[in-house]
Length: 157
Image 1 (cartoon, rainbow, N blue to C red):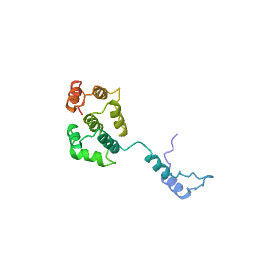
Image 2: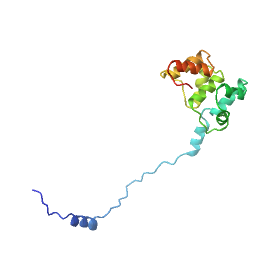
Image 3: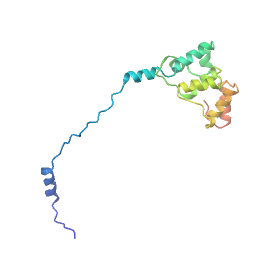
Image 4: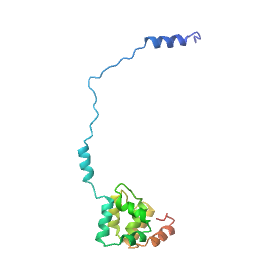
C-alpha cells in the first residue's frame, strides 16, 4: 500500500538540518611520488641519437649535396631545413622514406633512420612491404617507387 501523504519537503529540511559531514583522517596518508627529474633527464640524454644528428651523419658520410638531396627526395627546401635544424620537429613517415630513397640507403640503414623517428617498415603492411622491396632492390627513384605503389593500389609517398 502506497502512502501518498509523504512530505518530501519535510524530509529534505530534516536532512539539511541534521546531516553532518565527518572528516576522518586516515591512519596513514598516501604520498604522491616525487618525480626524480635528474634521473629522467639522464635517461632522456642517454637514448638514441636525435633524428637530425643521424641525418647529418649520413649526409656527411656519403658526402651528399643537401640541395640535390632534398630536390631528389621531392621535399620542399623549408621542410628540409626544419628537419635538419629543429630537434622538436617530427617529420612524417613518408617524408623520411623519401629522404632515405634520395640518400640511396639500403634496408638496414633506412630502418635504422626510421626507427630513430619512431617509425618502421612493417612486413604486414602492404605499402611498407613494397617500400622494403624497393630498398632491397636498390630502387631509389621516388617517382619509380610511387609508380610501383600506385600500380599495387597503395598511396604514393
